[in-house]
Length: 421
Image (tube, rainbow, N blue to C red; front, side, top):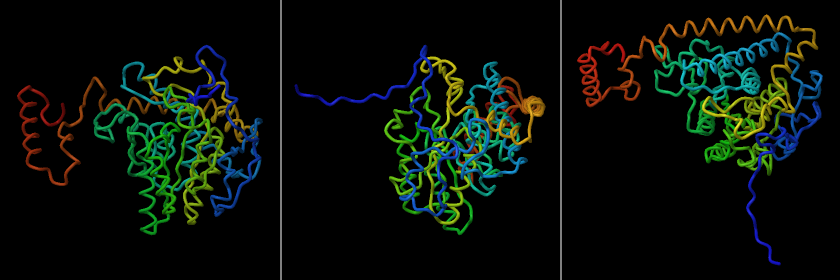
């Protein structure tokens, strides 16, 4: 009987109504993966793209060669940043449901990705984030008020009302503007890193995309340029298993790890437990040292799980098992770092509750302040003149005429003139 070829359709391990199943996730025991020299050739460390770097074991103790030996005080700062990120997310989610902001994207379960990586980098390093990296903003010290004002598109909005909510940026914090067009930040990061190298600077670029975005052409363009020119860049693929409702198998995750695409381009690829603060910090520090010493770029796959919906426009109950994130084999990043600090005798449940109360109060007071600069329903409003600015160095005549017409129309309607609309 003649056989016919058949197409393979990736299938999620569990659908609504079924028990969560994460048996497909390839794990390595904590402390089992070797730590090669930072100058090792990509061709000689291909196993890193298959194994999974882990430092914290199930008891919360740090083991193995990747242990970064951070001071307890620095670990407490990391815990604070992650907890603040989560509480900020929770409050903004509630605000969206109450109609106070139009849209939001949480990072539940992925806080260590942004916070640990940011803390492992230098302030002068340029960050090119995705829309689930608010932890970068918090770790770089961006005020919650400024983030909230961007969500409100009010008079203090850093983006002057021109961006979707959560599309933050920070020039003082060296955080590039987020794009809603997925994966554009990868080649941008490579280009910035190339420019830094040409200028003889000791800075690197780091960028983040989800595993679904690795199917975009920009991902491959970035890897090619990074490889050819050995750009000082860290390219991060956050494999949280879902691209909205599409399982990671559709982006190629069933065949090989996403980190394995690095060696194919001559780039070091490494998989890391994205919910292990210490492991993420150590791997990022290793990759940064490679970049700064001229050993080339690194592709990091952060294996984690998107604990919440993709965004406030999404309902994960329609395509995946209920409460599946609670069964994720790599646990919760905040709980794991908290337990590690308790094991060290540097933290307690009482101190954790006190910190939570302190940060909840900070989030509440920040929101109260943010609303004084305007809300979705109440003024003050953004100056309407802003729509004509920041495009041309000198405003051309046709835009000057349009602005004059706008001002005249606002005045005719009895509005507040050019001071807002």
